[in-house]
Length: 271
Ligand code: SIN
Image 1 (cartoon, helix red, strand yellow):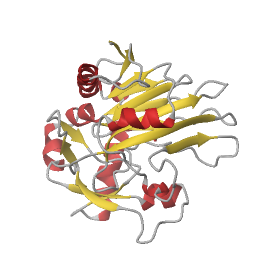
Image 2 (cartoon, protein in one colour):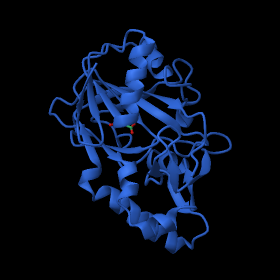
Image 3 (cartoon, rainbow, N blue to C red):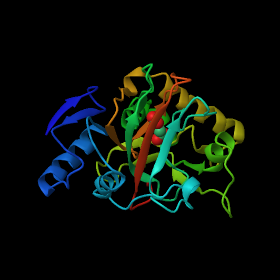
Image 4 (cartoon, rainbow, N blue to C red):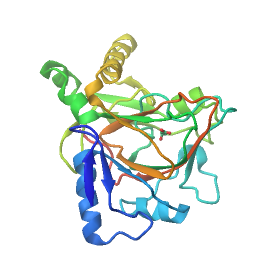
């Protein structure tokens, strides 16, 4: 297995692994270490059917079923990411961490893109949330530590995607603003503009001001970012506990197609 870093701190291309094959223990251990070290792993020229895609993701844990597609009967764990000339939005076009409205948000997502726009474009940006935390002042870190924020599925799924909520509504959960990654022990900035509605215990204007400062910090700090340029048959695996991502819809009216499988974390995010 060979790794080629995309930036000095986030993202690496992985060569020499065929994800269609069952990974032996030694390969998985190496891959898992690379996942911890780089947060985003890019595998080119992969030929995967849905069962192989799911089998690869399952090595990291139990597969996630997306709250918007719970009733999908065949392959409920597969989330289709499809954008065409008829689309009114593209999924994930804004900085976010996947499904943080869940009590146990995904620990990882594996997006397999099979069709890229013929005009080029359609990249995905990833941002390093360890570094986003580290770049804050000590005073700001101390202020955020101990705060909790509400993450609400209705914000993207109803507000942006106009879907009909399931009975009882979409999940809504509270997580610490600064969490500790359960495997690396490093601190992570854990609010995102996709799902976070407010910080608890603050006045609405205070919460809005702090969240907008943090989102601005993420969006306007280029050194946080690794950019993945897709080719057909590329699979990208990201650690959803320490990264955010942003799909770039710069290819209208062309099309892009892929499928995502996510893995549920076995613990809640904790400070
Ligand atoms: C997503 O948010 O998972 C989709 C990202 C992408 O399509 O680039």
